[in-house]
Image 1 (tube, rainbow, N blue to C red):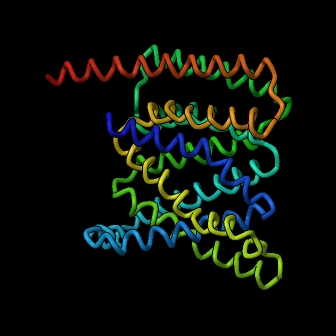
Image 2 (image 1 turned 90 degrees about the vertical axis):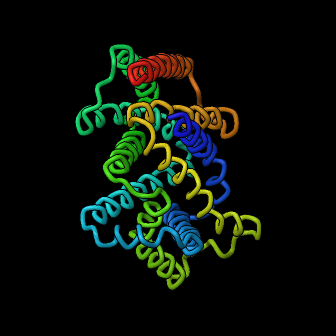
Length: 295
């Protein structure tokens, strides 16, 4: 569990900083950025697996399992949808709403964990959920309109997390499978944009173009860390650690991107971080109790 906790922290810090990365490509259409992100993720993972010959028996085993292939396909579509909405929102001035979306996600994770994985949160953990819920409601009221970006981000990533918990395979193989599913669509879109003379990626300054080509690495590493964390931690705990990411994003939206920030949002922020502390303390108590019983 300790190793899983560190993997989760690394993943969510990286995701919290990603708006800075995608902002450097704001001259491109969101669909073009996404297509390159998927394409170079596929290339990176293909090279990674080619150099990891010991994984080939597991790859062959997965390739003949219809249920796992179906779940990999579902997770590939879910995470690609999440990426598209996030990139579009960041490059169109909705960074705060993306932050709110990832604040909502842990509530989805707890609900999904109870409904589908039969996890049973303690009273203190339910208190944390309630506090987080109040914070999210306040943020939604302050935002002033139906937060479709936030809810779509929360639902797609929450379901993606659930799918990752329903299958058991190496994290790198899973990510390679997910990118393989959507790679043909991404490549076809890149070819279409080029044929229609609507592509802008290849006219980027050299440094920005190199960064775009490295988007596969920037995408793959946090997802690999997340997958390793998901295999070691309860889904509900994983969801609450996720608050690290949107907290970083929220700070970026205020101090770097200069989006509007109100006192109500500060109150919301306080409720959510209080929930995180309560949940972390409750989870540590559960872990200690389980360890004591095992001994």
